[in-house]
Image (cartoon, rainbow, N blue to C red; front, side):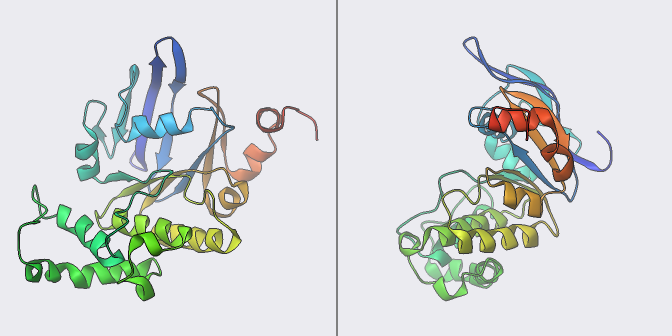
Length: 251
């Protein structure tokens, strides 16, 4: 692995009983970059994410994160190393407050215990850091609101806050703007750009305007394979990419 590479795959492949969802993907993500993985539906993007975060085990191939082979590790072990992901469906505790959600994520850093049996006074020691993270994602006015009461875009911001509470070196964001209106997309895009100032981000995203605005490098997948790679100008001008998205190689 090169010094400027934080995540790399070699011949990454996933075979589901004869259906090859991901085929020989060689991916290299530069440290400190925002890297997008795009492609039409069924291209293998989410399967790749599940392989990288170890929610699936590869049929063959190798995954290296920050110089360490993580191919055989479990999801929790990978997260502890600093590779943390979000999901397409917002994963927060709906009947806890915004503050409580972030505080639970901070409790995880205390070790093997979440301190559920301890006095609230002990947990209040985490409030200052939790409130700072909540402010970072623009949710300070909602700190005491139940997560279930938040608008959808704010729930995604809360999920990012809980992810940041784990102090990751790299974030895997799975369709962070899916289902959002224009204002929420603008807000979450600005948040991703802010987060990436001190971290590496790999994101699956269908909104190509978001990809064009945010991403340093783009990997295009189709039928589980890498079709093209480069900056947005390069991949958007590639006839094979146009054909994969539009069904035609012509303008």
